[in-house]
Image (cartoon, rainbow, N blue to C red):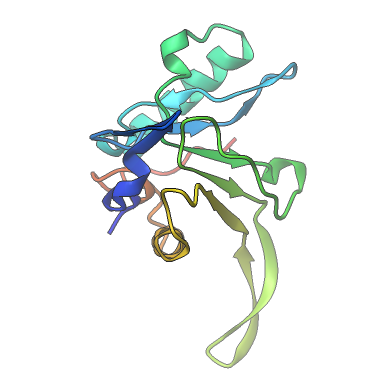
Length: 173
């Protein structure tokens, strides 16, 4: 099961009108140094992990150099914001206008955990899924978050958004 199978992530609410998209369009929150903008990876569910990584890098570069076109910041259905690089463990964010949810990601930390009756150090991070409760109830949000955490714990990052599954590895920066 992928996030794509949670149909609510393909929905947008503009004013009082509900729009259903065929795909999940993912906004990536980018700090440009002067402002925060949210370029959108269109039809993210149709792309491989390598394609997603390349497009995110391209959109981030354009955002930081003020080269985004209007169509590159419109049409998002859900966004992702990562403050882990600032050593933030947990935070909440406002849902961007017209979208149904935002996933916030904290830093990865090695913490003590019990594994098979032994105390070991393992990487952990906080995820926070903020949803528009007019469209998504708590159970649906919990199921989506469970899907995400399950995929991450298996190392299946590419399956979080893509229906094509993982290809290659995530970029290291």
